[in-house]
Length: 147
Image 1 (cartoon, rainbow, N blue to C red):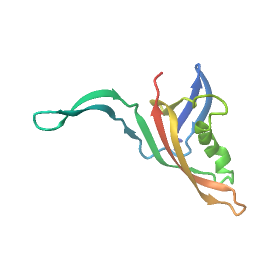
Image 2: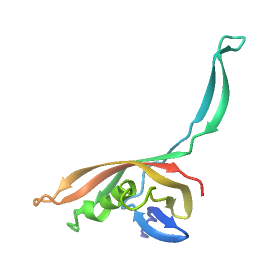
Image 3: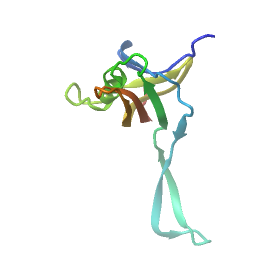
Image 4: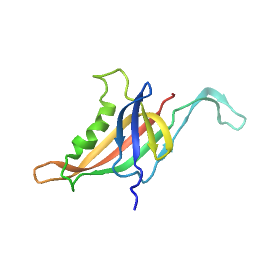
């Protein structure tokens, strides 16, 4: 049996790879969403009474990844140190630079989104008797950025 190819967030700057965050288990779904900005004319109505609308720009694509599991129980490694701290660095960037790291979300040969991490939430769900966290569930929201 071959090992599955893992999803990754790859941070790059000037064609150099700065960091790779490899998912321990692949996502079960990728949720993409995008919206349009609408400009509504106050008081202007169509013949049917609906407000007149002109279309503005598009918002960037957002990709939501939910229930991403990281489990180090078998090795006894601290899941926070090994995995979660890398995700936290993606949003704790202000001490280093004025902008968040830019990532490429890939899975196998598919490059899904050039993005930054807009939000992360995680919970630690399993601990060793000494309090070491060994399982975590992560939720991410990634937002598209232009090359």
